[in-house]
Amino acid sequence: MSGAGTGAVDWTDRLLEVDVGAVAHGGHCVARHEGRVVFVRHALPGERVRAVVTEDGGGSFCRADAVAVLHESPDRVEPACAWAGPGGCGGCDWQHATPAAQRGLKATVVAEQLARLAGVERDVVVEELPGGALDWRTRMRMAVTDDGRPGLRAHRSHEVLPVGDCPIAAPGALLPVLEREWTPTAEVEIVRDAAGEVHATELFEGARHPELGSGTAHERAAGRSWALPPEAFWQVHPHAADAVVDAVLEGVGELTPGACAWDLYGGAGLIAAPLAGRVGDGGRVVLVENDPAATAAAGECLADLPAVQVVRGRVEKVLGGLPGPPDVIVADPPRKGLGRGLAGELAQRGAARIVLVACDPAALARDVAALAEHGYRLEGLRAFDAFPMTHHVECVATLLAS
Ligand SMILES: C[S@@+](CC[C@H](N)C(=O)[O-])C[C@H]1O[C@@H](n2cnc3c(N)ncnc32)[C@H](O)[C@@H]1O
Image 1: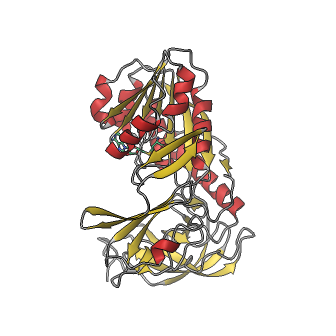
Image 2: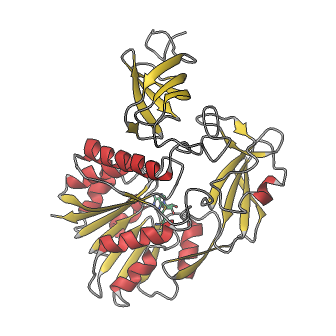
Image 3: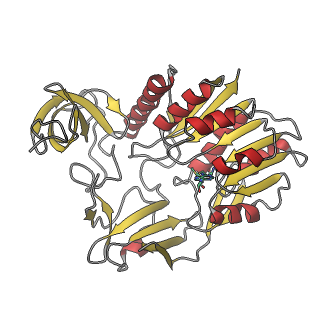
């Protein structure tokens, strides 16, 4: 067999002994073997491991799972979950590292992405959120086996593992879901809200079927209450919403009464609500969001804030018609980030500050680079361990116009 398109021998299933180098974005570390880069999961920097190749990427790289540790990092611990590790659940990447080491790895990744993609050198600290590394996940999607049991997918695979439970899930989130049978091969979206109610929706053949819960998730953040449909976006970690709001307000800084702020990708108004406090009743906060479930929730939950105007639509489509000019722009786009074109368009609006909320450090770094082309420079950066045990990290970056 050949590695993809190279004509070389396929390394899949080959056992390699490698020295593990630096962490890389995506939940793995970099090793080298016979001139090729090997992305090794379940290893830590400084370790020597025996690793089995799980995927030959063709060309210069392949992926591998560490199956034996020959020289162990002092940061290594026994995973809290029996399904973590080679061939196991794809949900967690760093169960084998102490929580402090996980934050260090994520800080390295954020700093490396900023340096490589944006040319910005910066020491990064990933801040711990309260509650520890387990029992935090209030939103998750389960897959369903061919015989109707809910489970979680193996890493980079369609295989469904009948996990029985998940130690990073919020207490009580999975029990009512695991007790039931579901349509074979469906998926189940689970929300455990701040009131402790579990909402579960079965997704099958393009349709959503609410199966458990009242259908209204109750959440609290920024000193306010929200009631929103479970499918509307809300932060997954119970302390992330407050952490993000604090960091965004720090980035926004003081606003004069009557100022105009844009809250792009505003969801149910988590950020728009405290921004309204900053601009006062004579000011304006323009929340743009394309999910009707989220805009309906924002309209109801923020009805007492006359400064907030909710615009339903895609940011890239409605941007030209938004009231402005904005003094500050907050943008919290999905994982792929703003992209170069939209970043350029935002920069044209002349805001003194742009605050970006990002869950992918690579996308953040690309957006920082794109905004730098228009004179914005990175001022503040906060990063939060809002997804312990996984490689994900939530960042809030403040850019100032020069
Ligand atoms: C990461 S969430 C942030 C939500 C909100 N800022 C919060 O913290 O709760 C991104 C939001 O952008 C919305 N969205 C995705 N693509 C969009 C687009 N092109 N235009 C407007 N909103 C979009 C999603 O529905 C989602 O609510």
